[in-house]
Amino acid sequence: MQPKEVLQQWIHAFNKGDSETLAQLYHEDAINHQVANEPVEGKAAIKKMFEDEFAAAEMVCIPENIFEDGEWAIMEWKDPKGLRGCGFFHVVDGKIKLQRGYWDKLSFIKLYDAG
Image 1 (cartoon, rainbow, N blue to C red):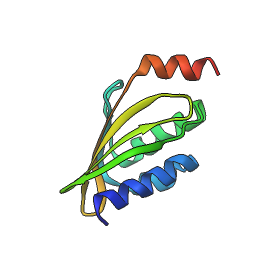
Image 2: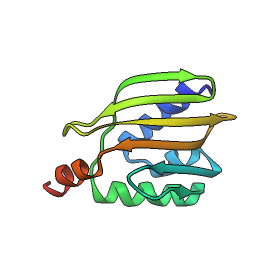
Image 3: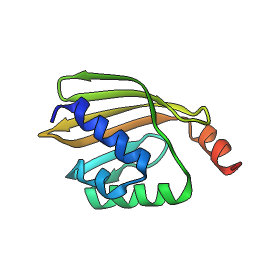
Image 4: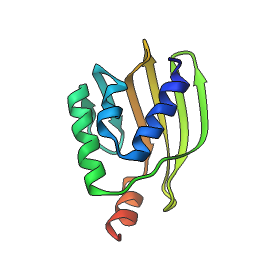
């Protein structure tokens, strides 16, 4: 799969809250680094991270722009509550090797802790 196709599958699984399918999109030794948090290393730890996040908040990813450049898929996104961010996905052999995301943690806490 091309990086953009992997990202589209990622968005679909994320919006279903499907941590199992999300985990299958990553290499065994992948790194997910949401820069507001510490990096999460390894497929199993990434799966647990998604399980914990989906249990804590109902999150929706609405892609605004998706770009592909070589082994990279890049996305600008928003959610229904107005949070915005971007994500960079390094895809090697059809699996995510590195994901890096940028978003405002304070805005997330204000939006999702307020219910």
